[in-house]
Amino acid sequence: MRMRKVLGAIGIAAVGGLIGVTAPMGMSPAVAQAAATPQPLASLDGSWLVVPRRTPGSVAIGGIPRSFVLSSDGRTVTGEFRFNGWVYPIANMVARPDGFAFDLTGKPPFVKMRAKLSAGGRFLDVWIGDEVVGVAPFLARRVTPAELATVERDAPRPDNMTKLPLPALHDVGVKNLAPTPPMGWNSWNVFREAVDDAAVRAMADRLVATGLRDAGYRYVTIDDGWQGKRDAAGVLHPNAKFPDMKGLVDYIHARGLKVGIYSSPGPVTCTGYIGSHGHEKQDAKTYAAWGVDLLKYDWCSASNIYDTKTEMQAQYQKMGDALAETGRAIVYSLCQYGLFDVGSWGNRVGGHLWRTGGDSIEGDLWHAIDFRFDHNGNAAHAGPSAWNDADMMLVGIDGLTPEEYRTHYTLWTMAASPIILGNDLRTMTPATKALVANREVIAIDQDPLGIQGRRVSQDGKTEIWTKRLADGSTAVALFNRGDAPAAMTVRWGGAVGVAQPKMLRDVWRGADLPVRPSYTTTVPRHGAILLRAF
Ligand code: GAL
Image (cartoon, rainbow, N blue to C red; front, side, top):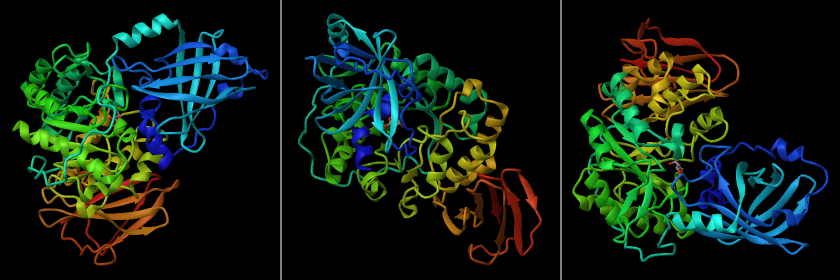
């Protein structure tokens, strides 16, 4: 956890996405197959600018450039990695048959890196991390010092990079702006930093045209990558991809939708865009003036500066107060990966929902879903305007089977998690649409009682969850996390704590089932059955 936090802290999530990744990836085959003769250390000399290639998130488009500046004395290489406004001195550079290995030092200390020259020394393939936390690849291009200086001169510059005075903790007093778990669409999973005005407008249009708005998906959230620079008065403006933010917000509102935006309590976001540190009131006013309805506030670089739970609470409280002061109804979405038992204080800082872990989109997708069975926050903290957020949906993004998507959606529904789609709605298949638009399933997630369902029985890889609903009925989910189909039985009146119903629905199929003293079915591998017992 410590290591992951450290990596997350310098925004490695943005380079390749490591927050929450547990799958060990090992060294890239490209490194393993490299020539057996070590490349000379002197060939690393010079300036290297991180450029997009391996992952869409590998460079800030309008964000802060990332670079290496290296120099060798024939025996070793020294220099620095400039990352999101921070400078990490490089140490312990060694040439190996498979490339170079070195460490980043500074705060946070100790990050392992590997690199290899490619394309005749014009590119540097870089891997950050190690076999324990996972390895994220990215690419740097050789540039002249003058070229790097120009890029850095024109780039946004974070300010307030050190600790600022923190307010005493108090209760911000949360308004009931999210009586049921927020539903909508967020740009991150599909667009990352490439998100732009046209893409967001297109998604708003698709929410309307597909009927998803009317099924409940109301928030269109622009995640990281919209920010530009602060002007002389400190007001933050969008970057060139968002020429008219107010116009965009009006466009979305005109379609009966709400607008979400993204920032960080640190000076810089996870991907290297300007954050709100020291500008909380100013930024909240800007969002309110644009007409924003939700703020996702992502810890990111704040962990380079603040360490303790109290500091984190104070940082989130600052923005909670700032949002309240605007007088606009803005839903406040905390994103700090579930640290410090956030559900126990999220409401006090003004939060309406809070993430319970790292990013689902990173690493092995089934593993990410499976992980949430055991890590979805403390159900006792959940309720109207207090939601444990299991992260954006992976439905409709390649990497899971149809059964796994259904299990994913069922688990989020039982956990009363916000349901924020992350797929490209322009290319959504009929099967994906049918899955996310199932009104009977949505009704269980959106039940006004706001109870977070819980696991009531477990047998090996199979488990049963129940969730009490406002009309007195109960949702019962049968999950099979195992790799083979499994027969499962619910005995009414037994351990699951649900009396024999008068009526039983198979919710996904929208069909009534015969009522018997028990219900037995075969659940596919990684599958789920969702029942509603009346
Ligand atoms: C991560 C966050 C993601 C996304 C990303 C943007 O920390 O968990 O959901 O917002 O930052 O850089």
